[in-house]
Image (cartoon, rainbow, N blue to C red; front, side, top):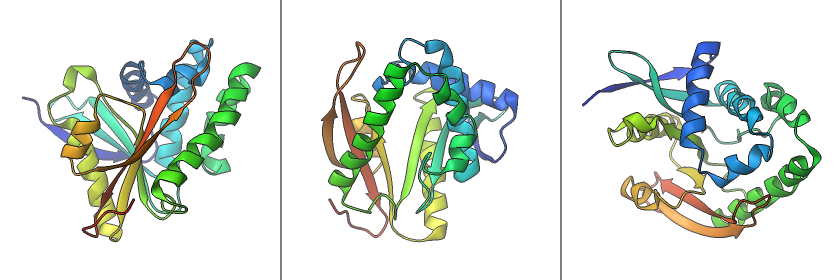
Length: 222
C-alpha cells in the first residue's frame, strides 16, 4: 500500500494547479454544487477549480497529499483559521474567481447570487450565529479515486486538525452535500450538527447541506 506525505502549497505552480484541477474535477463530478457552478458552461469548470485552489493557498492553508515515492499529488484540502472564510474577501476572489464569474451566463450568475446567502444562512442556523466565523473550517477535501481507501483523505484531515491544535482549542467545521461519507466523518470524530435541504436548479436535484463539527475542547455544541 502506498504511503503519502502531506505538504502545504503557498503559491501553486501551473503544474500543481493542473493536478489539483483534475482531482477536483473527477472527485466532484457528482457534487450538486459543482454541477450547478457552471450550468451549461462545463468548459469553465477548470477555471472554477483553479480559482478555488489559488484562494485557499492565499488566505488559508492548501494542503496536498503526495505519493511518497512518485511525489505526484493525489489529494487536497483547504483549511482556514478563525475569521478567514473561503472566498469571503475581495483578494481571494481576485485570484481567478471574479474572472470566472464574469464569464457565466445570467441564469447561473443569478443562481450563485441566490445560493450563497442561503448557504451561509443554513450553516449559521445549524451551528449557531457567529460559530463558523470563530472556528477553523475545512473546504474541498478530495482524493484521486485511484488512491481512495488508502488513508490519504484521513491524513489530510489530520494535518488540518494539527494546524488547529497548534493555534488554540476550539472546533473544526465543514459542510458537505455528499450522502456517501456521513458515517466516515462520524468515524473520524465529527458530529453531524444538522442538515437542511436547499433547492436545486437547471436539472440538478435538490441538495442536502450537512454541517459537521469536531470540538477540541472535549464537548460539542449544537
